[in-house]
Length: 274
Ligand code: FES
Image 1 (cartoon, helix red, strand yellow):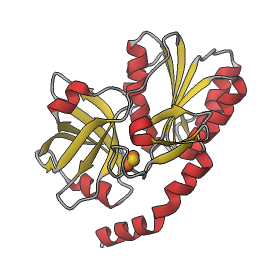
Image 2 (cartoon, protein in one colour; image 1 turned 45 degrees about the horizontal axis):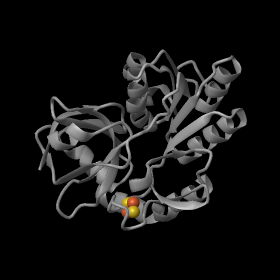
Image 3 (tube, rainbow, N blue to C red; image 1 turned 120 degrees about the vertical axis):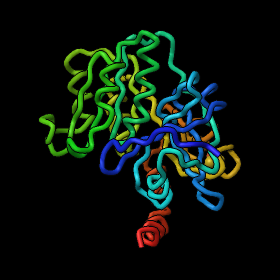
Image 4 (tube, rainbow, N blue to C red; image 1 turned 180 degrees about the vertical axis):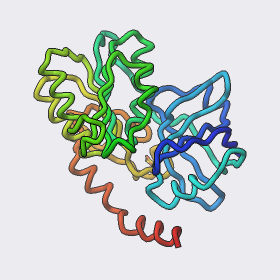
């Protein structure tokens, strides 16, 4: 059993939990994920490792209550335990050695996954610009933490409620056109956002890494649930990723696959809410 040591509400839909998992914390690296089950008969859900502390033996996860299992997870409190917590899974992010300046783009909850990447690049001495986009100012996440690991932080909101209206793609384009020579862009968030960021950076020839948040079941390359087409080849996000070259991912296919379970998912949510 894996104990919840800390629980924090980040906004009305998003919660953070620090879980006691010393063996995973010892091995975890930026870009990897865990699969958890809340209880014995529960669904397995993948969540990216948002932070880890090998000395304390803890893994931090951040999740949005969008489905039955994440809603159930959100009802647990400090001192409660999770049935299963498996990881670290997936390949750790691999950054080319000659990177000097990187833009890290987070869309909504994707910011929680982008944060460890920004932290790692900052640790490696890379100049980091973090750009994070949210629907409105009440949903902004990890702004303080991003400032701690970035040379520049730009927060955009769709409705302009924080005074900076626009999408992350607008902000990235502005930065590039005002002379920022990024060697690398990392984009993490909704598929549609990663698609448009990748289309933009392709025009400027900037290497772009995206993190694919596919449907996962076993997390070991056996079930095929997380398959994604990259450069015309089938890849499994759980073992070949989750990071892939954004210029090579078939986002349209990934979006079709992601929508396949919308109906049963919303039925399960409605049943859970009663
Ligand atoms: Fe089953 Fe990746 S989750 S193959």
